[in-house]
Image 1 (tube, rainbow, N blue to C red):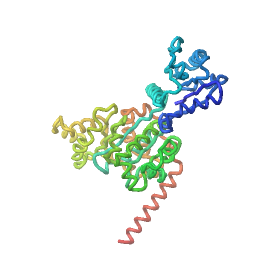
Image 2 (cartoon, rainbow, N blue to C red; image 1 turned 180 degrees about the vertical axis):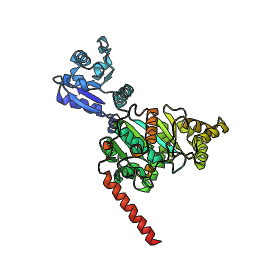
Image 3 (spheres, helix red, strand yellow; image 1 turned 60 degrees about the vertical axis):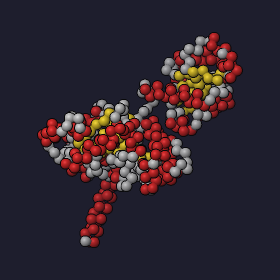
Image 4 (cartoon, one colour; image 1 turned 135 degrees about the horizontal axis):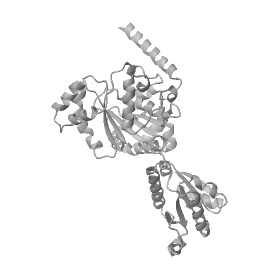
Length: 426
């Protein structure tokens, strides 16, 4: 959000900028505020790019002229006018035509008054699509081994391939499979540790230091590397403030944020499920997979019910024929969670078993680009259902990191050496 501070002198403008920044670094980071400086001599060249014009008390004698010209150059700009405390208390300004001003404030007003106006403008800009608000997609599953991380990677490649700046947020604190498979480097452990322990204030710079940028369109946020820090980060309610900050920075920095919860339900992942624009629940239609659905859905129902976002079910690696699924739906209680899940998941096609699911890690591709035509189409159908992408660009390797072949060969060689070592030990 661009804010232009205007006063008659450079010194006065700097003081006004300081008043604006008094809302605090965290709020400035959260609202992604950039403050520009202008005087009467040059404000007309800058006002066209600003979302908010803040007029200082030094130019009060020319405020009508400034307001008229600014609205002429930028009809959508919001204007906040500061008056001296004396003039504000006298109410003499009420005789002027100031109806086009968003807010008139005394210079000595509280920081909260200023912040309230900035937050309100930011919400309007988000609503109108002027400032970026990334869509949050949270992927979870009722049991392990259903391919949720592979699905998360597929959607990440799809989004990046179609020009969306995409963040993959990995909650797999044990193995970091998704992060490693995408080439995500080890995050700055000191930043995570100090932020989780409350030793340093978390800000946008700290957030950006945690990211591993695959390229201009795709980045990975891996979990903390130290297990004790990771457990606190995911499970400790005291870390919810940090989770909210990360989400806030991610929404203003990326078009899409894809969270792989690895099926873990905690205070952090529960919060993300509740805040998501779309939840994708991966189910495996094996006997064990279907048996796990009712209890899992009962557990997460309070988190996903009565929310603005949408909930989607995707069947992965189908093992039961569609005819038997239909029979199960007919036989189950229509009010049961199992009936609802099966009915909803059968409205859209399922991801079929695909050998490419074992080949994509560290290859520079995902199941979306190297899997079957059927699975590629399934990814695209769900991307449209979740409102991520409307039309699709031809697949190329440009969305992924160019040195993936070297990484893939490294993983293959390592795997072969480990296999040989195991055989020799046996």
